[in-house]
Image (cartoon, rainbow over all chains, first blue to last red; front, side):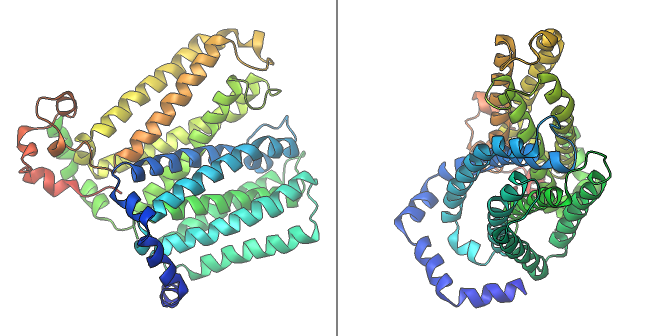
Amino acid sequence: MLDTLIQLMSASAVDDFFYGVDGSGLATYIKNAKFIVPWAGSFHLLSLGLMGGAIILADLRNIGPGLHSQSPASLNKAMKPWLIIAIIVLMTSGSILALSEMTRLLFSPPYWMKMASLASALIFTFGVRDHVVQNDGSFSLLAKILGVLAVGLYVVVFVMISSTLARLCLLGLAATLGALLWFSGKRPEALPLSMRAVSAISIVLWLTTAVAGRWIAFW
Amino acid sequence: MRDFVAWLSETPLSIALRESFVLWPALEAAHVMSIMLFAGTIFMVDLRLLGIVFKKVPFSEMDKRILPLTVAGFILLVITGVILVYSKPLVYYYSAFFRFKMVVIVIAMANIGVFHKMVQKGQAAWDTDEKAPRAGQISAIISLASWIVVIILGRMIAYDWLQCEKLEPGSFMHTFTHCKPMEVAGLDLDLELNLGEIS
């Protein structure tokens, strides 16, 4: 299904855009430079590590191990600048990596899976998770709408991927986080379900984006 | 050592692993997620020692609550890393980047050892301070620097800058990587058969 969508898109303006960018001076410069891509890849990985820290410290605490002496809201606030720095470096280095192989990306299922889950993760983290955690678990109307949008987008990705391996990995990830969500609800000092759920979803979305990104190299 | 690595690469499981279409990407996915867990948590512990984040969190709480996650991440990294190396042993044996990575990991582990055995001994006295004493901060800087270098070297393994055929025979890098003269000419059939690519 995803393959069909890619074929449809490749016959449209997306196709022209990708080939146009691929022929640009900047893309050519990056492709010809020996050291730019490896360094961009290194910074991509380093900022991914930083993002891991920011997400784990802020979100894993709500459903499992973490700094329980600190409130979820204060951890969320403390980790936000680091998450934003990580995302900026990831997007900058990611754009450089993309410029080096635009025409290949156009036909790469993991690339489109990553872009969709990235959009989903960004909408969910900043539009839903931050709001819910900062408001002790209550949703505003906007947060509800954005939540449905982000999770819906993720479900579309899951339905459309053609790889069984990818499906199994995503299911495994969701099952692990689901189990943590379940067990964290049994503790006497458990946080509201909404707060735990947004943290679990945030972790799933970012990990999916990271894994799909790594798979661009293989398909 | 080289003979052992060559033997390892011919074991049926190693061949099956490198010929598998799905295992390598699955292992790489697990390795990347483990990096997020390991590097992410150790970066935060180091930043705490430097007084940059969580200034009000006692160091003992970071030890008790965050370091177990770091250890779990490290165990996952070692397990997935060992399987990745086992699936293409000769590629890693002849990779200068991989050798450097192992050296820096040893340095980082030694730093952790020194930190736990010496620096942390008096932790009760500075447990709630905004930042660790000088020795703790130095340890944090060494830790941050070495793990950053490890991640960069790990990524560089995929690139061929320092492959044997590109190195000057007799140079430090050539000797360090144990390149054989035959391989400089690119005639080692045994090696060619087992190399494959890393991306």
